[in-house]
Image 1 (tube, one colour):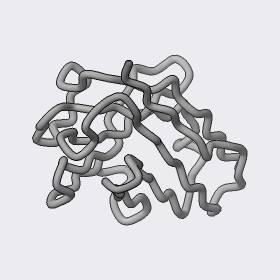
Image 2 (cartoon, helix red, strand yellow):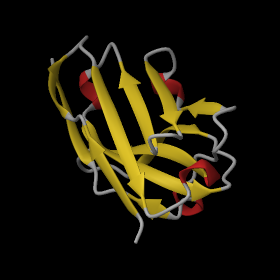
Image 3 (cartoon, one colour):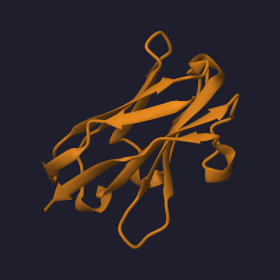
Image 4 (cartoon, one colour):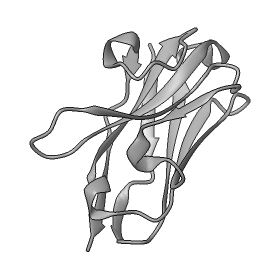
Length: 124
């Protein structure tokens, strides 16, 4: 049974930082491109960042470029999203997702497995 478990969310002031982690089990992690998506209240879920299965390519939505960094540790089955210079508009539930042999496309339907999400709230 595949499980993706996110952690690291919380409440932070604008300008602060958070580090989200997602631990995967039940799959061969090194074969999966990993992505982070987020959903703000009343909005559709949107792509945030991805890292390919080998770690050779990362992609980001324009609104987080230069502030967020995605990384992975295949030995620990973990993908991390370092979020700096947080803004109130970053407030959302953040989801980790896995796409087998994926290219890192920013499309929900490409991803096979999803975590339950972790809440990030940025106060102004």
